[in-house]
Amino acid sequence: MDHRARLVAAAVGALVIAVQLAGCGLAPQPGVTRLPPAASAPSVAPSTPSPLPTATLPPATVTPSVTPPPSTPRAASTPAPAPGDGPVMACGDGGTAAITGAERSVRVEGTCAQLTVSGSAITVDAASASIQALTMSGDRIRVTGAAVDSATIQGNDTALTVTGALGRLDLSGDRGSVTVGAALGSLLLRGQDNTVTAGGGIGQSTVEGRGNRVG
Image 1 (cartoon, rainbow, N blue to C red):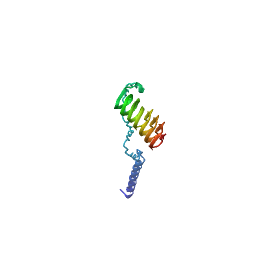
Image 2: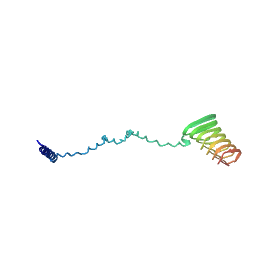
Image 3: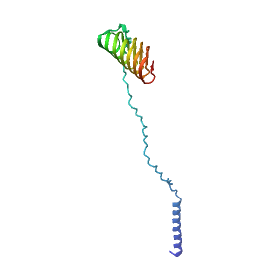
Image 4: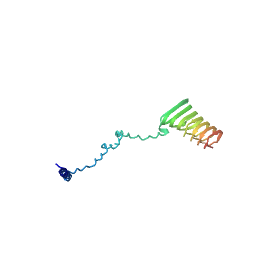
C-alpha cells in the first residue's frame, strides 16, 4: 500500500473513533440527585414531668367528746340562827368556855372567868353573862355582853358590843367595831379602818394605823 492509501485509512479510522466517542457523549446518562446529609438532631432525653409537691397535712386531732356530769344543785346557804335560838353554853360560877367553828350562833350564861371565841362567822349572845376575860380570834365574829373586864380581839370584820363598862380593850385587825355603853378604861388599837366608841369616854389610848375612828 502506498503512502496515500495509508493516509486515507488512518483518516477513516480516526473518523470512526470520533463518531463512537460522540455517541457515548450523546447517550443520556441517568440523573443522580444527591441530597446533603440530614443534620443529626441532638439527642434529647424525654423530659419526665417532675411530680408536683404534695402537701402533707398533719393528722387531724380528734377531741374526744366529754359529757359533763350533771350539775349538782347548790344548796342554798342557810343563814346563821339568831343568838337566842342557838345552843346554850353555861360558864357556871367562874368557869371557862370555848366556842369554835364557823357559821354558828351560841348563847352564853353565867359568870365566865374566861370566854374564848375562835373561828369565822360566829355570833355569841352573852348579854345575860358576866365575863372577866374575853378573847375573840378570827373573822366576822360578833359578841354581845353585859359587862367585860378585859377584851382581846384579833381578826377582821369583828364586832363587840358591851352594854355596860369595859375595863381594857386590845384590838388588832381591820374593819373592827367596838361599842361600849359605859366607860372604856384603856385602849390599845393596831390596824386600819376600825371604830371604837364609848358612851362614858375612853381613858388611856394608843392607836396605830390608818382610818381608825376613836371617840
